[in-house]
Amino acid sequence: MAKIELTRTPFIKNALKSRYPQLAVFIIMLVGYIFAILAGLIGTPVGSHNFSIVFVWIAWWAILILVAVPFFGRGWCAVCPIPLPGEWLQRGAVLSPPDKKPKWLNLRVPKMFRNIWLQNISFLLLALFSSVLLTTPSITGIVLTTMLFAAIGLSTIFERRAFCRYLCPVGGFIGLYSQAAPIELRINDKHVCVTCEGKPCYNGSSAGYGCLWDVFPGGLTKNTYCGLCMECIRTCPHDNIAVNLRPFSADLAKPSTRMDEAFKAFIMLGSAMIYAGVLLGPWGALKDAAYNVGSSAWFVYVFIFLAIIFGILPCIFTLGIVRTKSSIPLKHRFASLSSTLIPLGLMFWVAFSLSFVLTNASYILAALSDPLGLGWNLFGTANTAWQPMLTSILAPAQTLALVGGLIWSARTAQKASNEVKVSSTPVIAYCFVLTSIMLWLLL
Amino acid sequence: MKSRLALLSFLLAGLVVAFAPLPVQSVTPQARTFQMDARQFAYSPSDLQVNLGDTVTIQLLSTDVVHGLYVDGYDVSIEADPGQIATLTFIANKPGSFRFRCNVTCGAMHPFMIGKITVGTNNWLFRSLGLATLVIAGVMTSIKSKT
Image 1 (cartoon, each protein chain N blue to C red):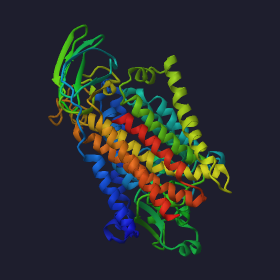
Image 2 (cartoon, rainbow over the protein chains, first blue to last red; image 1 turned 45 degrees about the vertical axis):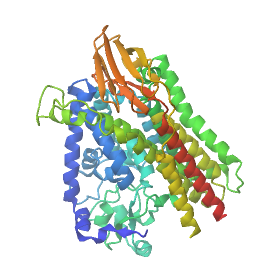
Image 3 (cartoon, each protein chain N blue to C red; image 1 turned 180 degrees about the vertical axis):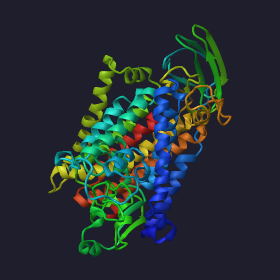
Image 4 (tube, rainbow over the protein chains, first blue to last red; image 1 turned 90 degrees about the horizontal axis):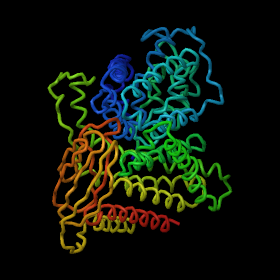
């Protein structure tokens, strides 16, 4: 399938060039985000009746993992409200043209942090406390508040969106999986960028801000770090930026060789499997261990969680590829071949989320009418009874997602192994074993 | 042409694996009773196995707060007050694996208070594993034919 340039459509182009449609969505999202914080902090402690739990961990999560990430890549980042207040503070403006004089420290993020290891750590921190985070409104409120203030704090110290690029626990995995999405922002003609004076897409101009994600669009070859902020579409004086529809997982044809990204793939894959066992499985002892933070059982849970992600999964993977004949160093092969796990991990999350979301979606209607659990009935749906949805199609849908993910990852393995000139068989076998375990956990 | 034929045969094989009727073991249905404890946030026992056609009775005893039990796919439920036994009886006439879960908000981890009942054989799991195996066989065949 050839690429289709969506920005050739005048309606789409104009909607992206203008700041107002994006600002309108930003403001709605920001109001929702602040309301989620308030609901978490002052609403009912019963998670299934609190807006912060129901709308963040059921509604938002469903949209993010089932629609936004697979089909729009970093589409969520394009409208995420978390960096907004910090960005407005950093610019000293909401919409007015950029002032060249920095308002705050405007430092570059130190080189040692210019990777996604901090995002890996921040995701793991949330993951280890997830049983409490997903079910306790006050904890969700505190985490959302912390993220908002971390973004504000980093905006006053560092240039651009340092929080989104290097710390956001959600942005890390969205970036990883956005490589599989059928949407991309790219330049049309490289020569135009080479000869362009001043590089306003990166440095900003009177038409807009320099890339908020610290990316030079002229060098973009994959989606991972492009946050779709659309500033380059506004600033490019040559109309050389395009948003394209493309085949799924086009970025994975040239796999990354970075270890931080490789481990991100393992973290996400392992987390999906552990959650499927702990949260959706019938084993009460596991749930107790995950929920009772600080207890000795929880420390054992943490140890096992980290051992699976940083020990068992990568070690077995390495054992599989270590004997493949290649002149390419093992570290390089490990990183490149781990791109195979990106479609697999994404589909593991889809299968896990289908179960969680369909079972609990009926809480959305009740929380809509009574978001704080104070006995309101704003839209007459506060007393909607809990009822799992579409349970008859759940198992076939999960099979479709997991077996589809296996096909997708096997095809990706073939491409990645061609790049590093090794056999794809061990990696495909690895994906098969993990898929079988996930099927057993979910079905 | 050859690759299209191969793809078609794998698709047909996939349909057979997914949907072909399987022989049903004829086991005389019997009445089965489970005494089950419910506490925050687990059932004990939490993994039940019955035969197709069995009359299943679950005597649910809640040991702390009010708990419920709802069986996915069967759409039947009960609620048990603390210290009281509530009884649910149904005929296990649908084969497969089903989650049962608490349907009364019982605390923070309530949405994850889950158990599992398998009626007969969990055929869908075996069909899914079969499909995954078929996929791998197809991929390996295509790799071999290219090399």
